[in-house]
Length: 274
Image (cartoon, rainbow, N blue to C red):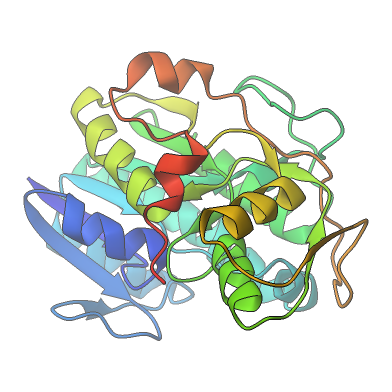
């Protein structure tokens, strides 16, 4: 099986490269990947041409502009990468009849209630969430596509790593009191590998257990016996874009479907690259 991974230098892309079996076609934009191809997702003709020439059986689109504040500032670029590029990936997928897995986010929701189900109505509160929702919409115009919504992916970076490194240095951590469903890139990659075999379509939520960032920071502090303190705050200084207060995802459907324990906090924290 030939599998194309866009964004192979990202956290999920790196883990997919080690977990997946088959012939992997890895693409990157800025951070080079060994054996990979440089591919600019903003060059739509090049993007379609590359996919059609390589003719993968499966395309996993992990590439995204994920910096929430940068998306609010660089809106045109965010739209091109998170939304418009997906339209062109779909166009090429149709030509070669590839199965498309598109990675999306809990930030398509407004955070008013939490534990969102797949069928709940999205209502993003920032531009990142809006562009990702548009990307979902493009992906779902293709019958042979699966949108995976996830939350707070971490590996060698992300909130858990920030907490660990900051506390280890003896500095205080300010943790936003809001809730989400963090998952390690490794556990997410394992679920993607399993889902390829099912060839499901539509939308599915793959994420960790609901937890506040404050509770998670306390758990990391205790797990690693780290010094310094964790303080709960209403907002983080320096944020430009609004964040949803509770963007946690209901994962009951994926828990029934998959054999992998992708959801327990303790299991996910094992895969922090520290």
